[in-house]
Image (cartoon, rainbow, N blue to C red):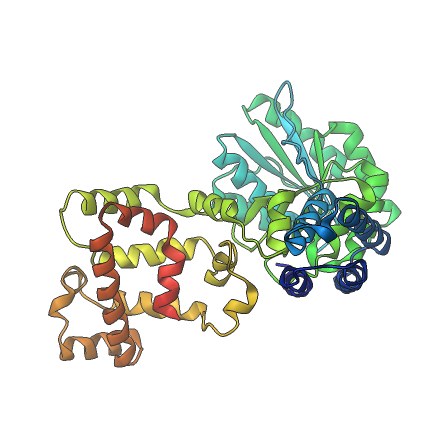
Length: 450
């Protein structure tokens, strides 16, 4: 996420940190590099100009140039202004006085509305709500089938399927059904177009007039830069957006959309899609995003992802086993820990969320997602007894495991050697071992696959 922009900013700000003294000339030269990085990331020109003006004004006005650590102060100012640029105070999701709360998703075709509808449904359900999804797209072939499949995967009901009605009629009948069936939130997946034409906008106006949604979210492709801002302007004029959901942010999005939308429209980013899985939707928080852009990490995001994906029952069983001395950490436990880490997403992305870990530190590391699968295959090729008692794994058994997993014998040997080192460490750590499994997992797994 924002990898190129992050690296450029880190390079410029790193130069500031290295200097014991910063003159106005140095500051000006550095901020020109920051401006260049922002424009290359497709940030709106006026937004970039205003942002740098505020940074320069504060840097000079707060006597930063004569302070003991001027570089750190400049970094702090850039961070604070980034938070303001992204929209400091994220409003909570609106709640209707009388259910259901209606969430209306709009956007162009291909932006990820249907997937986002399912992700929102899952998030609401995880938060103890009773959501339902509605396919309000009578035009795109198989749109309703796609949403029905996703709804089934997250065990959330689909209230209506299009049968020739227009979007307004579909939305109205679905909300009326929700009102009588105990649904707390209705997520309306509206139709899109390849471009925002008048016909689409007229239909969306009628939907808003008919159902009076409590939230209107634009689902926008985070890879599109300023184009996303232009699209947002059109929808905002038509239906009055209350928020934006940026999708496809798990790749190297340039950052233009995220850094421009609030500055241009005053419409906050509410959620960010960071993958294809139903759980890959995170609440957008400006403070955390600014920290990630400046490569300061996002430990809160890491903990939140762990809470959402890790099976607490499994970790508690391991905790009880280790604390009560009912057995040693074995390969069954190790397999479980690998699977738990996999649920949290790509390891490289997790490591970047740890404060102090920067992109350039991971360049030489061989963090191949396939290696985690290879570890899993090796352990699953063992018998239950071999997983519980790794000491019985002699040469012939290791050769059999290598054949069964499709991996060379030296990979089996390396896994077992490093597993033994990990087991010794966990013995020494005693009561800290369960915490290691819950909070230190990514680092330890990285040693095994690096």
